[in-house]
Image 1 (spheres, rainbow, N blue to C red):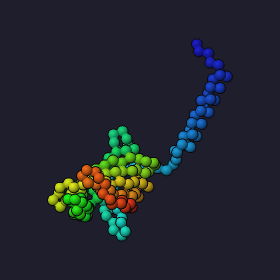
Image 2: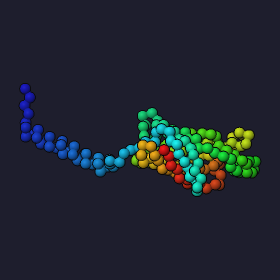
Image 3: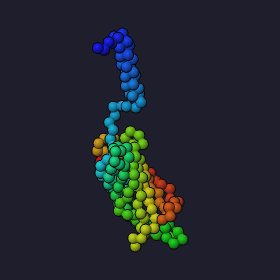
Length: 175
């Protein structure tokens, strides 16, 4: 037969309940709030806007295994035209375009804010690789089917030497 000291049991129970209440109050103070979390997973139809020009693109975000809403891969399909860059012999300007898709990674940097980086190959008119373009920025989903964000680009030679072209932050919006 087990003998229970009720006075001791009551003291222990009081301490356990107090610890549980303090812990749940601390959890609320540590950032748990009622704002929903919107992970970026899925495919997004979006626009990058420069001045009055809206350029459509599609991005697909997938989470890494066991990393739902935390980090993963991104495939982007921003259409590209031809631009002149100093990637020819002795830095001569040549007409280049990018591969049709870019691949990269994303990660959560705070609640409903996700940073991404994606790379594409720059090609000359004959389709020969002459450099790289890196896209980076953030998307901020504010609903399950909408985000606002910003994208930047930097250009590099095949040897990853940065070209002296300052990035221009470009607003984005997706659905």
